[in-house]
Image 1: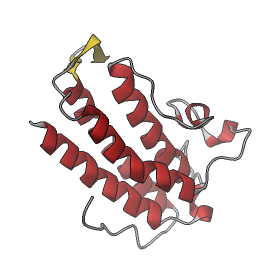
Image 2 (image 1 turned 30 degrees about the vertical axis):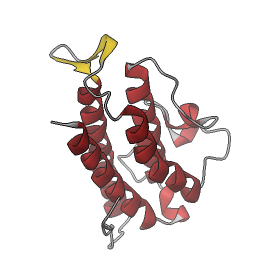
Image 3 (image 1 turned 60 degrees about the vertical axis):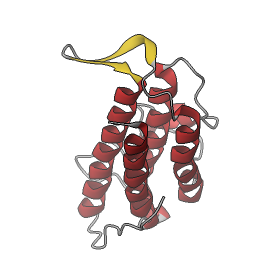
Length: 167
């Protein structure tokens, strides 16, 4: 798979995430229905943080993250432990919209690059190139889109989201 296709997928997936965000109110964003340990806001922030940390971390470069985003949105965090006001949906939207283009500009032409150490998932999955890590980050975002959809359904939201075209 070439760079263009991987980044095309990144943009497509992100457009779906932003469409889900656009169909979310501030009130809906923080509800944690029974059976869920995080909210829509957390999932949106986690998508941003995880993609930034996965991709930059693999090549040992510094991610571009606003203050407190790791403590709010990293794996194994929860809104239940937040001691500061989390970002608004508008703030999250701005970061989510800008990220794919910024990552593409920075990493296009570098996807065959190997990290200093492989990225291991469990015992059987090992990623050795940046392309593999970006593809995994894309899959990871889709996983959290599914959680966002489930959170909306659990809240009784009928209109989940519509996809806009373009980058």
